[in-house]
Image (cartoon, rainbow, N blue to C red; front, side):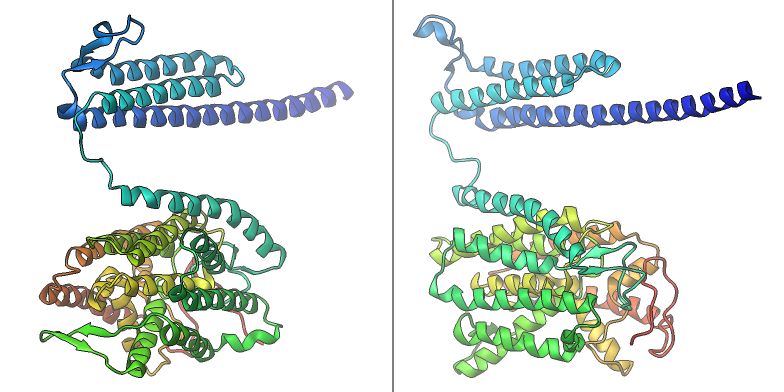
Length: 519
């Protein structure tokens, strides 16, 4: 009996050890595969750059180039420029040899073997790439730069923004969880929420403060930007305060739950920018010419209403994981292009382009943390990104129609949503599940597909807006508006049949929060 028990116990122990060993080996194989792919992709990028760069510059290169540096000085070091094709060939050979050495390493699990191969192959091909560029520069006739130097000036702020987000967001998410600033599908209820697991709040606050810090570093404090900086800070803080009260029902800040209170605060903050800083002094007349606002008061009112509408329109397209970061990121890139379209380029245009690069870098960094399933929500602080885009679009001298085309899908979705709510006798500020992304979700689209759809449509319509920025092709703009509006109206009319009265419970949805009774 004891012997049988001992054998049975040994089987259990050895079985567990076998499972653990098998899991460890599979994990190592997966890790090695990921490293091999990373090594191959990095080297392939360097090789592709060599081929493309050589093809673009080949006609400018002298017939003889310094190539044989190991030979005596003079003509002995020169070779026909055709020999430069050896660079990508040798780089490809280095990559293939390195990949060949990964076979025994994967088989015997040699520690740090893949790291060594990656370091050697990437370093060697990087040096070969740098050598090729150096030879081309030394042995070529004058040529135009491949990339406009103005765009190169935007790389540093964009990269700094991306790195800053990667550093700050994980720590902020931990802080938000410690303070219980977290939205959970099992606790909080909102008719338009699409969460599958708990997520921290306050992403808009991080975006706004990070944008302020980086703008102060790369742009400084010009007098015209001070009101904008102050307004952005206030909206960012207001967003985080709203996120806090939203997750803490017992707080005295519950007054912010009232949408009309939030709207009033937004109008008050935005009017500061309009009164003390940037204003819209004219709009294009659909029947020809330009409508000028000679009155400062009229200009302030128009600017305040437009900016407030703009940032609300954007924030309403913030219901899908990864959706908002992509929309704002793409729109930021288009703002850069609009700012750099002038010749000569003014100081203010350069500032707008730099701030657009900062916004684009931040949003690119946000995608990783807001991608489904999201680790952090933008929250009400998403208004900060809307304020940035609205302000920069005015500074870049973009026409209102151009700005509308850039965010055409969110703009028309918001317009139809407001109209639908009014026709149903609801408050236009009361949330529901009637937005376009909700309709697409109910029709079987998954969250990631919807997010990418919004990115692509923003890029497409934004590109059209950029191409027609100075021409103001009204017919084209109205046609686009009409087509998309028709699609949205049809979708909403079909969806209207499925909408349940406000007093009835919402239809079940696996991604929708479980509504709980409010105290």
